[in-house]
Image (cartoon, rainbow, N blue to C red; front, side, top):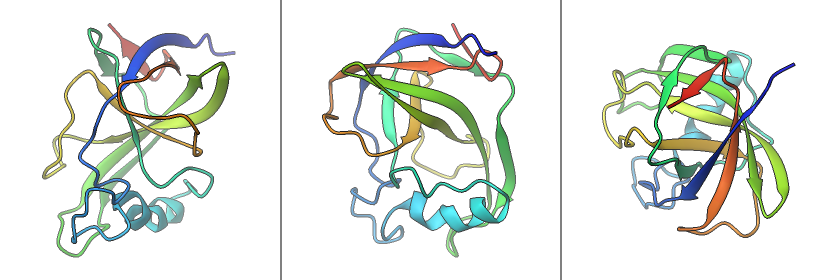
Length: 150
């Protein structure tokens, strides 16, 4: 059984490319929608998750990757983008007393060409959640065997 580690976080504005809300014409409908088929072909089906990420700052903390639940190497998901490596980690999102299962979405910085996050921001995939807005507080439960918060 996993002893989840709970960390407080704040929803922060991202680049808007994962969901497509940033209006970047290279990523119509968002990068998550564009990547879903590639992940599904390798066994990770994301259909139950909202096709965008919640950017959660856990500042003043940061994290270290220990062992992912899933890692996919050299994923070619767009014609005009180089292949990237992606990892996913178990998480739970707690908002207003409600818990939602999710995944930390982690495009490896060494293969990611643009749209970087700071070291205290985690990108979360989960089902659509009412009540989300920038600046609100929520909690993440993380698997300490997968991500170490420090």
